Length: 345
Image 1 (spheres, rainbow, N blue to C red):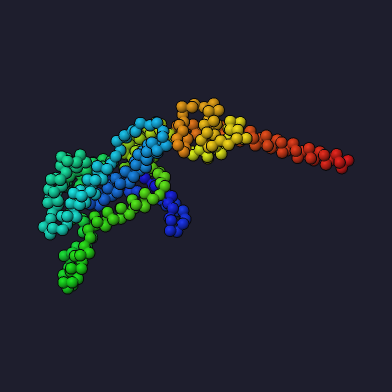
Image 2: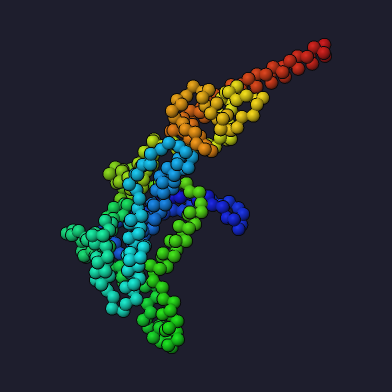
């Protein structure tokens, strides 16, 4: 997924457009700490996409007073996110285990089982596959599929406190390094939180990039793989909500100004009419399906295709007006030239 970000910096007072490319979800037979971080990042970004595209869309209908029955598309990933980042989640228990000198992957696994087996549907015991060379510790349910995790604890240290370089220094240096000890998971969470904070301050536009096949072979389309991506990425649900909802909307003042040309006589010029009343009069005067739009508090909402039809009607009206204007202008010029020719004679 590529996300085009349009942000406004209040301190520097200028607009900026940024391109942010998200990593592809990884799905190996066994996933270590690196894959967990990448997949969790995708989980957070997918939740941001879902919330922006589905939840906020329907929340705007409610704010605008549009009659709408809330649709649950089953794309809420918060349970999986809480499993990883909340207290007693995977990251929390990992960092806790790092504080114990005798902690191992097995002790971490035991704590995870005690806290999450049977309590979280996203956390499962590993299924046994003959192709696996190593035993997985647990499986996580991500939006892009099941991920089997193994050997997490050994990957966490940014700096090993008991390294040889620490042993050569004095006691103060040891205590200083121990006090500033930071795991990779802590650093990762800080960077991810900063990223999400920046994303929430932007106006995003999403471009979905699909992988046609796993072998990177040109001209080959793995249809099941593409369909799986469309389902996991929320593209199919986006199409569904566009069909059922109102993907196009314009505030009343802009609609009045842009589409007044469709029927100028619908809005009287000698009396003041507010933008909403003008929009209502204009739309009711047009030969269109009046069930394809709804009036909100500040905007008019359109079903799929209606705004495109209005644009085509506007282009036709503009072409007629321009043709008439050109005819009148050319007639005026020709009459002036004829008058000049007659006076010269």
